[in-house]
Image (cartoon, rainbow, N blue to C red):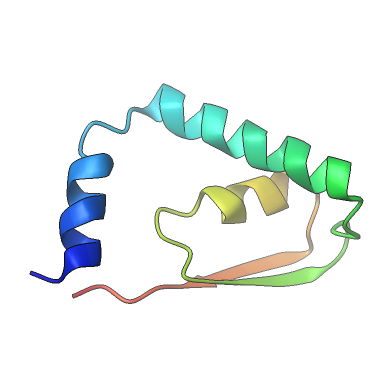
Amino acid sequence: MIKTEYLYKRLFADYSEDLFERSVLLQVERFKRWGLPIKGAVCLDVGCGGGRTLVALKKLNAREVHGIDIYR
């Protein structure tokens, strides 16, 4: 097992739905604070992991969101 996989399997083993939603809302607030022009945008998240950034982008009215990650 590679080191990254070892770390993240343990880190997110007990990642509840509530914790996921709170992390999405944190991303939403960060994007708002940064003033990124997301509404109507087509967005790509490379290394998206569990997808919290993708969900946040849709909550901010991105037209399309796409994510890619490597799973081993």
